[in-house]
Image (tube, rainbow, N blue to C red):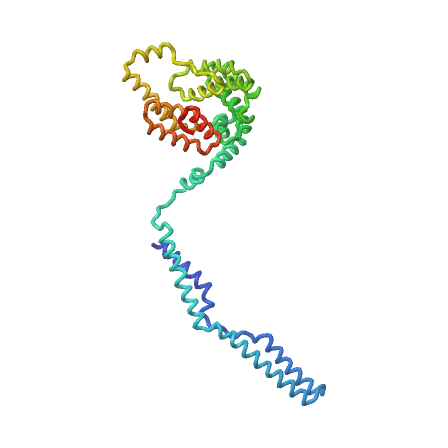
Length: 366
């Protein structure tokens, strides 16, 4: 309460300092410049008449004319002075003195937060970081790394963020530093190759391919590196080699591998069918009852639907889901999945076109 009283007293003092002159009586100002001129002219005529420079008749006529002008000027200045009369000035001062603080209090009570608790200093320091944009956060990390270039952990954290932002050249630099200060691994080499390909607008250049091959040499099962090596073969026109690489990936992969739809769509793109279930899997499916097979199939479909909620950019996955629901006779779910697919890829014109083309090929929609 004491603090509020001090604030109120300071506000009143500030208002008084500004408005006090309005409430005081106005001293008659020094007569205007026009009346002074006319009075000087009267003195000058008297002096010239005494010196015999002008005749008595001319001097009298000049005095009459100047006197008339002097009276008119005095009346005009008097009217200007009385325009801002004392009652009016005091009314303005009183309204401002009471109204300004009152309006301020009402606005603060309605729009402010008078009951809000204190904001600890530590929270104030963290608030700008929490609300900062991704670009500002990246800039802060980059500033830190400029001062600490051997911070391998910092380079490793920064690199994938730069890839997401599309800053592939900077990501390449960050990944090379990460390898230098953190050690060489298959995953880091594969990420470096992906960044180099991203900088080349998706083309697997010789430098990118070299990094993928280094990754496979470190780990023959490195998925990303194997896929991009297959993509390099496709871009070179060696579709058969690409198909062999991608088929081998699917053969080694578990049924619920999240990247399986990507590889399958790549095989379809080059006109090659994806490998079917292995003999053991087919035998296991044949030995099941019809109910068990349906349960297995529905479980796979539900897992696919769950995955697509987390990764909505997988166009091939959406096509598989819509087709699966259609085959199962669940047309409502098929339409719902179709709507979700279009919403998920609607902001990407290329993916949306791929979705529509795929639906036309399936004879489902377009």
